[in-house]
Image 1 (cartoon, one colour):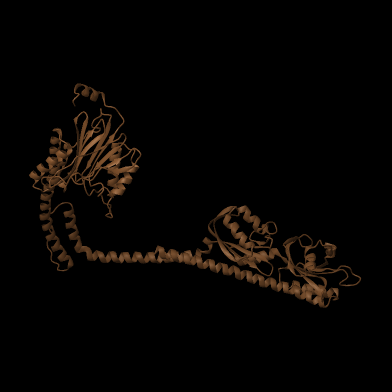
Image 2 (tube, rainbow, N blue to C red):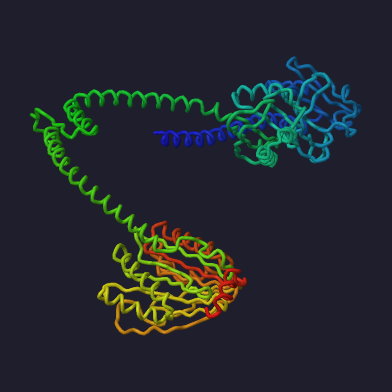
Length: 631
């Protein structure tokens, strides 16, 4: 309803604007016809005198009086002859009839020699040879009124013999326009912009549109002023214009059009609020009628629904009892066989089934809480198997180490581990067990124990993986397998001896920020096939370089659109964070993967970062080496 009324209002405003502009154009056309008619009277006088320039004096005054009777707007009419053009012994003669009392005089007694160039209307007509409308001026002679003069040449054949004029009273013109234009503000400007007519009579002759526009300091109104003075026809809308000492609220319509005969410009200022008032009143009546209709409809619907819903109240009361937890509620005395009766019977059956379902659900929730508690205990147990203190070796300044394990479910199949087998050697391992959940967590715990026990015996990484493969295959019967990257790091030299059992190769981040893969597989997956051989390989970690080990949960992370994170993104990420320490690098990587998957991990993610630092061995290490040179 509101949208419809708004469209009606906007359409009405558009229609009113068009109608208002057409009314202004019609007013200008009507005023133009009036001025054409008045100027035609003077044209006829000029043509008549051109044919009979020797008409006697009394006849000329009577001719001017006839002109005066044409319209109350005419203040005066005159004829001004060239020297000796009227009579051979009379140099200048300018008969003039003025005022409503038809006073008469010879303008030479007031103007003197009007042929000298001082009298604008005479000199301009004589020079141009064409009729014209003068600029508005104040007649300070006999009349003391504001007038505008229409002057036309008198010619005997091709000889210029004088000028016939017509003076219009601007005060009467202003009164006539005020009666036609109420309630709009109106103004008529001469070609130079001076006010010929204005809704504030005090401004006539004393100001102009250009001065008014400059004083308002409104760019939009100034733009409209330029169109008015150019003689265009149109309309502009100005909002909250400061006018006549106060702000006109809302929109102000500025309509303008030229008056072609005189070259004048007609403009009006109309308040949209005032012009649209009748439409607002109609809309208010429509709103009142529609509101009454809605109110009556509401009363009717409420009355009918009260009768129809009384049987429902019993059912509603029963539902309220159930909502408060009283499942023993029962609807009694069901006699109706209609929809409400069937609904009541269905409600009773529903309550009976609901009680059974709640009992079953309670049992399931109890079992589920038990499982969740056991899973939480399993996760805590699994966390206890992984190193938790970072930095792990605070007294060792030769390297930096950090690792993270983020499970997709309660427990994870990924794990990492690291430990010193002697002061010079750090063993580190990262592994990914196939599958998820409790079974993967159990295999992870077994694998971690086997690797740690074998590493303490001093075996090489390849030998450790080979023995681990056999033990896992025997214990799991090939039911699960593990990918393992196992490395032995010489802290002093930076040399890493490793064996890779089917695990994704780690990344090496150089000091200059370049990122490369290193540590390709030296054997197959662990725990699946018997009699597998795992080779040892080696590379050296230079000062300032970082080795990042990770599980496949990193590259195989999927976005909501199903797109893998992928190796190229990992490489770009590592280049961006190449200067980070191990703690910052691992933390940023976990946040990156979590954000990529909207905090919904699809697979376990484990990271281990090792960075070689430019630092000598700690005092404790030097003391140990001195006491035990063989180590």
